[in-house]
Image 1 (cartoon, rainbow, N blue to C red):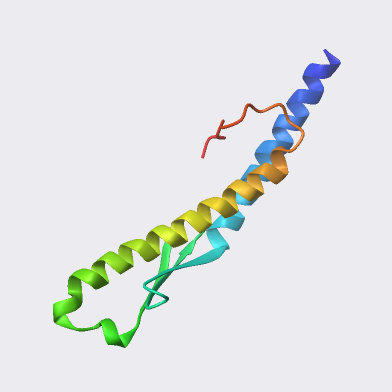
Image 2 (image 1 turned 90 degrees about the horizontal axis):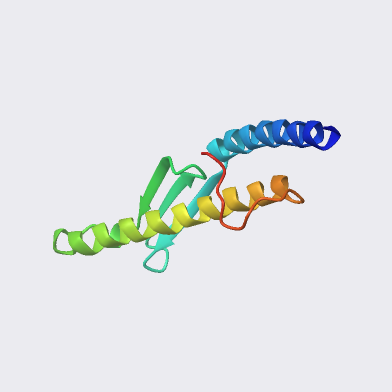
Amino acid sequence: MKDFMGMMQKAQQLQERAQQVQAEAAEHVVEGSAGAGMVSVSLTAKGDLRSIRIDPSLLKPEEAEILEDLMVAAHADARSKGEAFLQEKMSEITAGLPIPPGMKLPF
């Protein structure tokens, strides 16, 4: 029974730390870029878009499709950096716990 109580305590600590990481992710800003930095986006690590920066040379009507593609690519770049941030933080708090590889905690 002692092991069960210890496991429950660890689970509660894990839940509290996971909530802290989520709050931190809402504030942590990552930047993604595309087109050699001609388009960049800033997102929180949770994926909320904060800003978009577009090089003025891209603001030509005939290049609208290129700009749209670059914006999507920059967003994907920033999103992957935010996910990497969250994964790193979660691996720090779950270190030593017997969680199967690939299992994601509920968020």
